[in-house]
Length: 293
Ligand code: SF4
Ligand code: SF4
Image 1 (tube, rainbow, N blue to C red):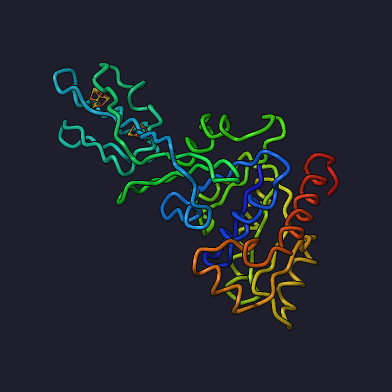
Image 2 (tube, helix red, strand yellow):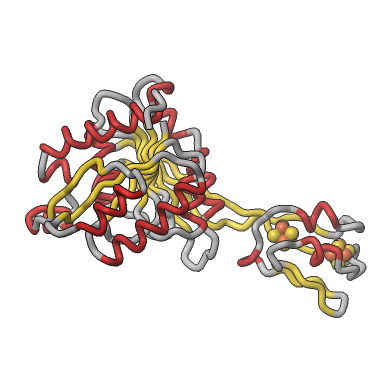
């Protein structure tokens, strides 16, 4: 089962929930995937022992000048405007290239080949007495997180180190903030979207946006309200109108906030949330496995 923890807005407590849910499910194999590849931070809470590292490359077309006739076919077929032909010379813009291979397969002179370009790294290991862990780290300046997230989601190694039967494995994906392509890439193929929000105008605004994405992908979803406080009527109303179950509430609490800021997990600071998160998981399991809406 694959649970994606997303929020729309950054700073709502998404990583707090993802890491504590992973720590709370002690009776089954769990894998936490930190898909926030531009700024991964789940390791700060979990302190995994990262033992395996793999570079991730993207294939970028390069021109074999001796064969190129400057016909321009490659530029015509590139949907991403990542290749141009000016006065018979081919220019490739790697930062726009999605490595789709269309230009290579459509070149009538076989004048394009592909060269690997390292865009980031995957790292994996075990959290002592805890879940398996893996993350992607995008190289500074690399514009496209999607290929790295795709590779992280399909990486076999961390699934092999997660203790317990593979059929019981629960994957918890910590999504990037926002609602752009990296978030869609993280949500795609998920079984359930666990949305973390806060009762502020920005929190509600960004929850609306991420719910649109989740509904577009036809994912069942539920909400955790973090830093909850009285008079959060707009957020409650929104959830009610969209039939989004509120699965857990964490009140605004300075004690929790300062402990989390020092790198502790929610379940270490307040063990009672372990039981609450197991209840959230039971709801998700019922929704996903038994098809209960
Ligand atoms: S399609 Fe091939 S031959 Fe034509 S301009 Fe591009 S690289 Fe050159
Ligand atoms: S591989 Fe795809 S995206 Fe990249 S330049 Fe060629 S056609 Fe464009």
